[in-house]
Length: 369
Image 1 (cartoon, rainbow, N blue to C red):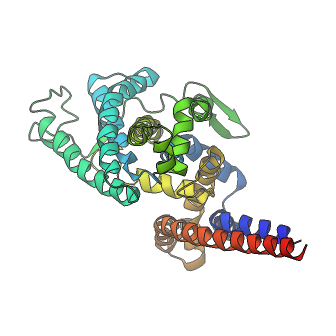
Image 2 (cartoon, one colour):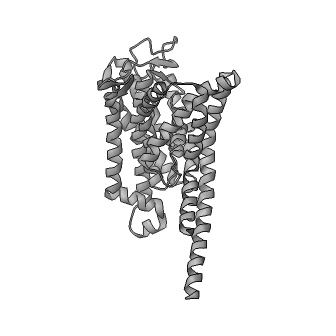
Image 3 (cartoon, helix red, strand yellow):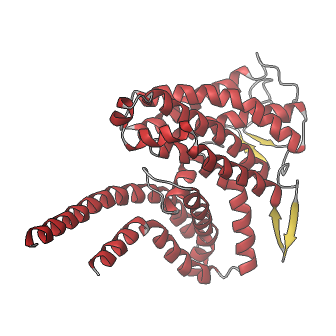
C-alpha cells in the first residue's frame, strides 16, 4: 500500500502541469461555446503546424542541456530560406524543400556556434541559450535590413523597403500550404493535411532511431552524468555541440513547416516566440528539463493550443471582454515555463525525500530481521 501511495505521489508530481491544463480546458470549453468539430479542426491544424518545432527540443534535453531556447537560431535560418525562395518565385512543396536546403548550412553554423557558447556555460544552458537568441537576432536583423538588396541581390521589389534595400516587415509566402496540400483529406468536415503529418512522423521515427545509435547513447550518457561519461571516453563537449546542431537544424525545418501553414512571414519578429511556445507546449505535455519524450511533445502541443483556442472566447463570454481571455492566455504561456521549472525542482526534492524514506524503511526492516 505504501508503494502504491508513493507511485501515486510520483505520478501526481510528474503530471501536475498536464493535469492543470486539462482542468483549465475542461472549464473553459463549455464557457467558450465552441462546437466539437471546430475544436477538432483547430487542434488538427495546430498539431500539423507546431509539432515539428516542439520535437526539435528533445535531443538537447536528452543530452542534459535542458530546454534549448536557442532553437530560434534555427527558426531564423528557415526564415532566410523562405525569403530567398519567395524572391525567386519558387512555389509549392519544391520551394519549401529548397528553403530547408538553404537554411540547413546556416542552421548548422549557428548551431555549432551555439553549442560552443553553451559548453562555456555548463549548468546555465537555458538562460544562456535565451540570451544567445537575442544576440543572433540582432545579426539577423542587420543582415535583412542592410545587406539584402544592397550587397545581396533581391530582385523582387515587393520584398524590399521603399528605400531600395532591406526586407519588408511582412511577406506573403508564395509557397503557402506547400506541404499541407500534398495529401489533404477531409473527414467529417475536418481537413487533415496528411502530407505534413507524414513529415512529422518521419522526424518522430528519426528521433526514435537516433536514440538507439552510438551517438544517441552517448548523448543519453552525457545527460545523466558528464563526469562519468568523460571517464568512459566520451567526448562530452563534442557530443553536446552535436545535440545543439541537430536541434537547430530540426528547428529550421520546423519553422518552414510552421510558416507554410500560416502563409505570411513576420520578417523581424516571426521567430521571437518560437522557442517559448515550443518549450511551453513540451512542458505542458509532462516533460521536464531533464526528461522529455515524443508523447510529451505531441500531447503537450494539443493541450497547449487547445487552451490557446478556447481562452479568448471563454474570457469574452464570461466577462464581456475578449482581451481578458487574451491576457490570461499570454499569462499562462509565459507562466507555464516558470511553473514547470519550479515544479521540476520541487519534484526532484520530493523524489530524493521519498527515496531516502524508502531506504530508511528498508534498513529498518533489515535490522528487525
